[in-house]
Length: 173
Ligand SMILES: O=P(O)(O)OC[C@H]1O[C@H](OP(=O)(O)OP(=O)(O)O)[C@H](O)[C@@H]1O
Ligand SMILES: Nc1ncnc2[nH]cnc12
Image (cartoon, rainbow, N blue to C red; front, side):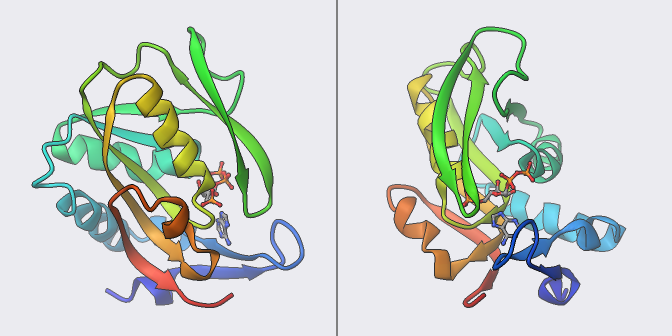
């Protein structure tokens, strides 16, 4: 499956200088979407994962079907003010700005084994923040899995303490 050929690239979105990788062109193709979810799920088969965690919003798109396929729990990580119960918060930087993420305090039981899923690894800030939130709750992050990696942004260096797996990589903007 030529995933790279199916990912649409939009220059200067959401601001000048960013070459946006648009996965909606994969999502709207049932066979391609199924292929991606099956591949991401297969990477987790031997890791005895208890919980799949995904950051808003595109982490939900890849995380929830993988959790369903593996028969595992899903925990959403959300932008501030969206989760209704008591939360913990972590602030982080993105390729284009800064943001913060939250998780419910009771979302993870201490000792649970967690895989974090997202569509794209850029600087690694989003998923590092997600991993820190999980660890603050006592979870163990056993894998970070992405559809796309922008290698030139060196996210793997930010995430050097973790196992990182990706399906498609871009070596230059
Ligand atoms: O590795 P990083 O530099 O952190 O960048 C990657 C993150 O950026 C995008 O999300 P975005 O914050 O644009 O939010 P969205 O999923 O709601 O579109 C993407 O879905 C990743 O979560
Ligand atoms: N270049 C990019 N394309 C799509 N999503 C992103 N998130 C951060 N950088 C991105």
